[in-house]
Image (cartoon, rainbow, N blue to C red; front, side, top):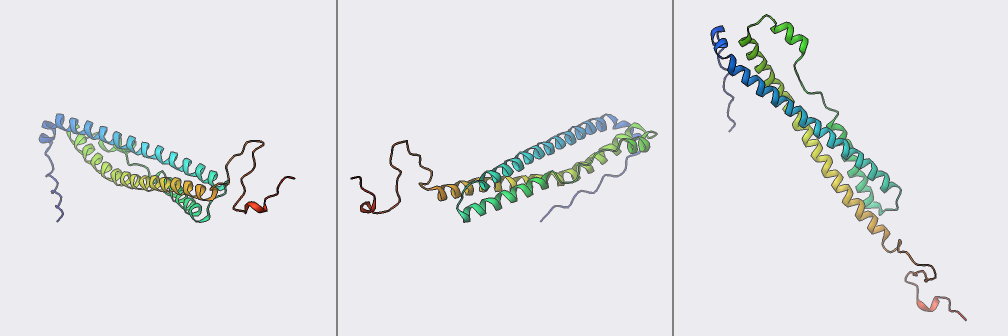
Length: 191
């Protein structure tokens, strides 16, 4: 059973706001720092997603120019397509919410310090909650892209190994080229 959220505290009187200014300053500085860490974390996920998309695109091109086993090769292409799609979806989400400087100035320029700090704290909490939802979606999409790249690498490797078999064995000059399973009597004999 989910817990119900606590009701918001009653509005503070101007005297209470003035008495709580130091506490509200501390809360606001913590919330601002937390929003900055959240934005930084989101930027790191974006960077990782760009890396995965680039890797998947390169791996796709590498596999495309090789002879590969059809079933596992096609599965590898599908895995890379999923990785590219989910990777692009990571950095194709809405921007994080943040304070609008002009609106904040116009709204709070004439308010008391305590009232402004209280309102800013409430606004930042709302932004953090909205941004957290976006961040969770980004992280889930990045995880899917990472798993798809890993699957693509495994499938590509299997596909290339299955198709290659003994085809790519090198021979030194002057050595006979290995023949397939033809009988020895059909090989030309020197006279």
